[in-house]
Image (tube, rainbow, N blue to C red; front, top):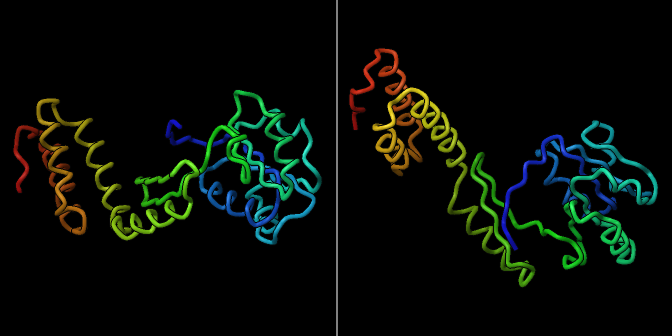
Length: 212
């Protein structure tokens, strides 16, 4: 399989099913700014609450073919294999389809994911061993602490400044310096470095080296 990260902002996502599996899938989707519609006669309390909070739309009935037609992404997570298989058969080849119980019938799988702000680490064994995926995910969670969230914001801000304000001949060295691990856990050093960049720009002294 070809690994990609998909931007779901404003995209239509249809989830067939309202049980615990559907809940887990939806929980991962809520921060993606997708337009989520859940179709199921019954749903768990959490999905009902999200519907009440207008975080998604719940249609209280069985899924129909027309429900799937405009979906960018479809998740088949009902408690019946036959219904899930039917959903996969109705989907267009241009739609993304995830099958909770029969992944071979869909065209993408959802990996184990570790998020640290802008840093996204995903792990998949292509269905060979979900348990191993979970084990590796735990290792990544320990190795890549929440400090990376602040660090990535710092890198993004500095990179934007450097690419916009500094001549090309200086950019590579400046960008390489940002990856120095000493910045990772030192928020004060991050702040000082960014301020120094801004001071150089303010004084129009882009030829002036940044202090170590």
